[in-house]
Image (cartoon, rainbow, N blue to C red; front, side):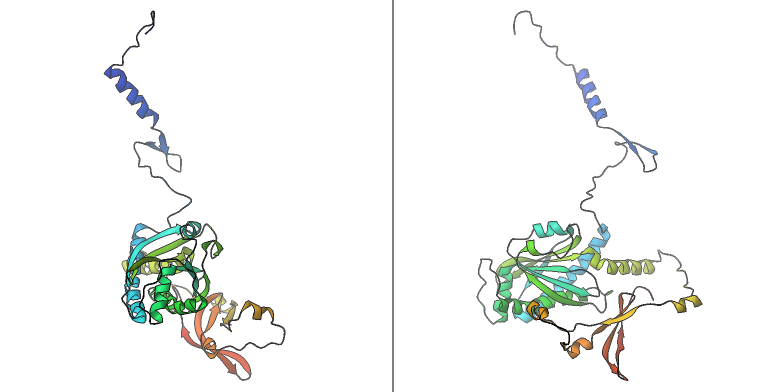
Length: 337
């Protein structure tokens, strides 16, 4: 210390306590309700962060019930696929969560096998990921082989993809069966892709229900993922919630529906649709006026009858008195009549 300088005064315990108190007061702020009334300070209420970029669409209870249903789905799936492969396949739910579409794609490897599928009458496109090594192991078993799949990730050939579609059909079919409220649901495969960057199934901000399944097969372990837009299953979720509300009596007495005579005169659009055929892009571009497209009988027998844009019946298309007609064979259940 230079001559003439005075030594700094030391802090007493009272000075330290006063500084600590002032620091605590600096992090305390008034809190208010949405209507402007006071809640006190931030010390009086519990403050939790909210991620507005990744909203929670389901409550913890709903996620728990959905996870339980998907665990049962995975158990049934393991039994069916094992019988097809004639080998034991171990499946276990690894994760079940909500995730933005762009984050889900970002979590995938640059080289993987993705299958895009629809489920009628739901709207939207879902994604099934089967890692290439696991896909190769499946195709080897289907062809009767017993050797393990190579450790390297490879692109499947057209023949291998065609063989894999047998397993994919089982996965999507069992996924439809788990929804007891979705009677009449039918899955259809629409495309395959190997690079996630080229998949444009949903807008970037779409929230997805993501199911991760640990798959153990031939000594190896991979993760199968199924990503479904929440909007795709939202109608089913609403029907499930309504059914639980009726069982518990939480909704109280239901109001009786009064039919008014004026309703009889309301015009409602009704149209029928079926899958005519599938063709390559090259064949599609060559179509011209006068060409005839033959529809298989199986498609005609599964004609969907839409009332005001909603699929309500399944019928069989044909002719009657020289006119095109559709005979209703099945009425699809709905949440309300």
